[in-house]
Image (cartoon, rainbow over all chains, first blue to last red; front, top):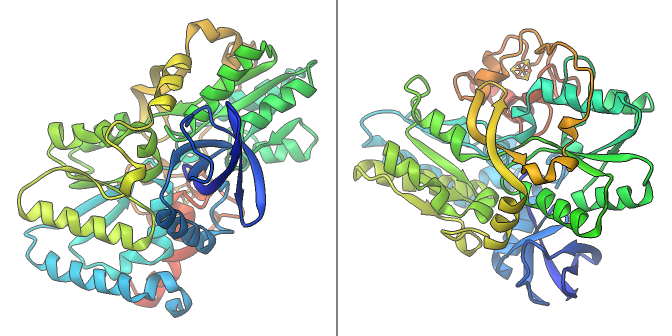
Length: 75
Length: 370
Ligand code: SF4
């Protein structure tokens, strides 16, 4: 349940942004990570960005998540 | 059977396991390592790491699954709120099948009770805007990763004057139960695997006390099987040199200070309070209660009728959560308690120890005859 998912920030305004992953995009809040930059990979948890993550680590995390998918609830 | 799983038989995993076996030979005593993160629980079981590690390395699970540590009377309280008639409950999906004294949220929902499963606390704000005649109560569970998202939703509701958004406070923080466990001679933990995504918020400094006050190493680790094994190697190395350090092995997402914006919002909204943990009892300053200024958003203050709490009879989840027993030592494990029909909370989510063992370790242990 404490898992956060890497997604890339496509655009942002003051408090929120749009992230995408595999062609699916989602509105998230940037209240917990206001310094997020467009183009950056972010760790997203329950609709909020909580941190930036470098691309390589993001990819490794995504590979793991897809491996665990279906079993981990509430990704 | 496991050969198809790239995570247990990849060369990297085996190579690390061999290295651990070599290094562990020189250890004088058995090393007990506790993880306190549902994702670690899951990864260890899934990749079969226990069966790859030598006898001298014992991996145990602690209270790292948020729904598992949520006590039965808190769920009773959630259900009692729906019975008022003016409340819509909103919740992360994880909580739906957790047993209360009577029924689960899923059961009352299938009977027509207003319980919404949401991905984000922000969705509860949307619900509150569209249903002004009802109180929208968000069931606030989760550790430091999740709590700031709930705090942020509360800040947003305050700014907007959205009066009908409330929470049932139930968030918890990790360091206090770990302090309890670290000091418990019966559990006798030698080192901790520290949770990656909790540490993103808290910073690794939040766990320094383990090394300083208890002389225990702690490694912040990712949840790939190789991350876990590397952390085990680091713990063995510290053990050999008689060291106890808190090390971040999870890269740049974790800093020493954590996420400042999130910590600030947490502080604006919540105050540390005593909290009850399943299995561990009441622990001072381990819960997050709403600040008195936000009392109007505290659904725990709404009048309700609560039943006498009844723990699932025979469930040993409390001991499982302290790492005192492995799940198969519970007589109900596997029959009647299975993930599809959980008797206790630890069998509900895939992060729960009992569920993780049931799905993965059971077969392995049968094969290896342990
Ligand atoms: S197997 Fe089921 S009954 Fe036994 S401790 Fe685990 S959750 Fe409780």
